[in-house]
Image (cartoon, rainbow, N blue to C red; front, side, top):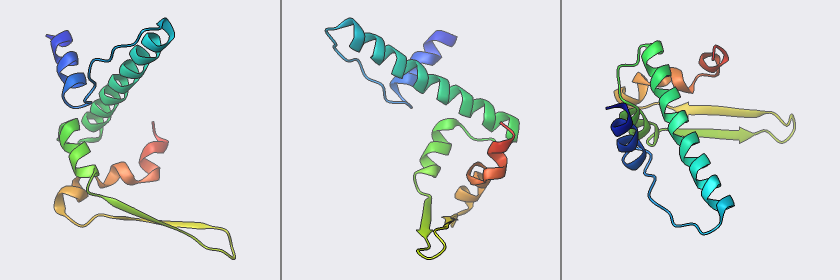
Length: 106
């Protein structure tokens, strides 16, 4: 069951498709990329559970695609200001994932 779920995630959510490579180096690179994408997916799944966000990774990714962050670099002071625009209630459910303080714990 775990292996079938892993294949479902890689084919569906991560959208990894079969590739035909002809050199060992490219085959190894492709397998490495697929593994890392799956690892990032599983880590996000774990973070969602531990932080109390009761949504699937797929739903969080779909919501995150609708969020815009604006960055402005001030010319005189050379500092950068950023503002993440969380407009809908769905976007606000994953607000903590866009807070720098949240990521300092992990």
